[in-house]
Image 1 (cartoon, rainbow, N blue to C red):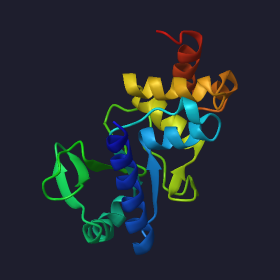
Image 2 (cartoon, helix red, strand yellow; image 1 turned 180 degrees about the vertical axis):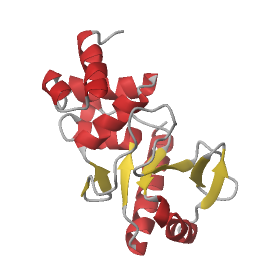
Image 3 (cartoon, one colour; image 1 turned 45 degrees about the vertical axis):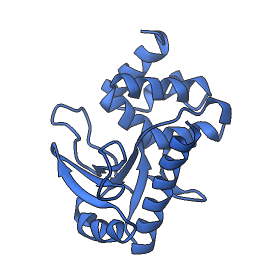
Image 4 (cartoon, one colour; image 1 turned 90 degrees about the vertical axis):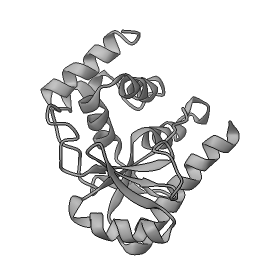
Length: 183
């Protein structure tokens, strides 16, 4: 188990280093971003994730493909998603998933993904801001997104005061999650 967690971490660091070296603006999103934020408050509350989600601008995809290839990743466009497999024999689970900044992940989503500019540097990668991450998780609102939001709530990073800071539809979702955490 420890090896599996470490492989995801290494994949994240290699991808971030490749993008940094090529000067490609990006931000780490998804479960790794949640883990990074949660770890700032309570390392014991960090939840592991199996994949890496990177926010990129579509206009930077070509440069990102070149940079990631130099780091051993293989670009694929599968099921309307762009991914970087961790080598030619890797499975989709062993990938870096691309989310395009400023675009809706699905047409029915309330809001588009944030821009990579809504991020901050950490010691090892650019991290999506907490507010942008919360908006993304509330927009997706799948079971795993609700779990990630609960993690942020449980460590005190997000509370009911956030409901007024968000677009009304997202604030309503957050209020629902806070009022019925098990629902």
